Length: 75
Image (tube, rainbow, N blue to C red; front, side, top):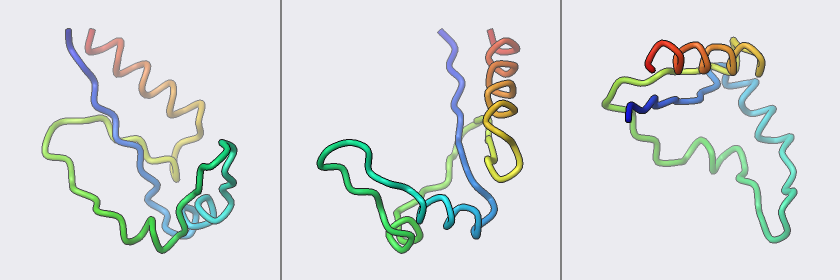
């Protein structure tokens, strides 16, 4: 079984911050991270092939189409 790794990023820091600051917890007991917690997170760059979806450049619909197209090509 072949897999497709997908990394979702937002390359626009101002937009990313706007999204983080606009989040609200919708699950009882869940706490959303602050912008500083997002900035301080321990991110490790991927060391394998993957499909990168940049949500600063693609809409949800475009992102889904891109992922589905990659799945079809891989399988």
